Length: 178
Ligand code: FES
Image (tube, rainbow, N blue to C red; front, side, top):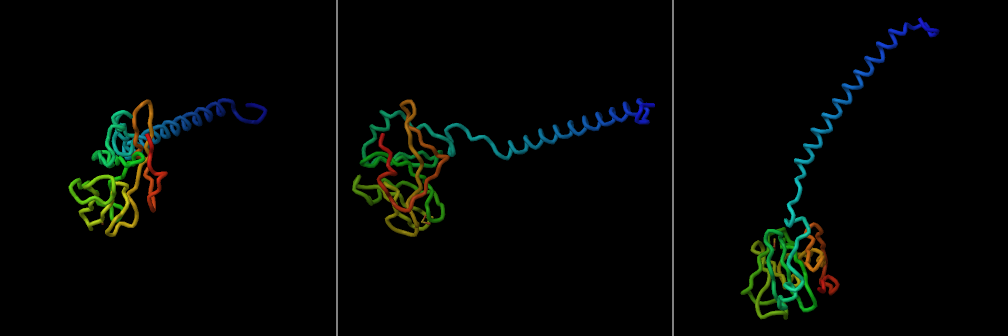
């Protein structure tokens, strides 16, 4: 017996039980954390490098600058068009701003701008028409095509398809000079 009136063996037994209980809770917590982490990882798959939603390497600065004014280059897997306008480049998201249809580039259609003799975006769903700046020329789309930021890193032109920029009108500041 101790001065507190408890048998020391009893105290030792209680501590062991508490320790075992704590160990079980810790083990259970680890298993739960691991299985939850696995579930979250499987629901949120990693984006493949260069795919839509990531920073996409387009080409070298020299190759991009060699594109003549008026050129539209399609990146279908990355869901954008690189449009060469007179003062630089726009990376246009190919999703129509009306109801989201995929916008095709029609190189042989009449032009809607003064950069080339032919070519425009022509939405197959409800006839929305956009020029090389992604600006609506006719039809129901309420605003210009969305754009992605363009940058230059180590001599490569990069389009950040993880950052969608919406706009209500065309402004010269949207064009990236390279
Ligand atoms: S979805 Fe393009 S015009 Fe309607």
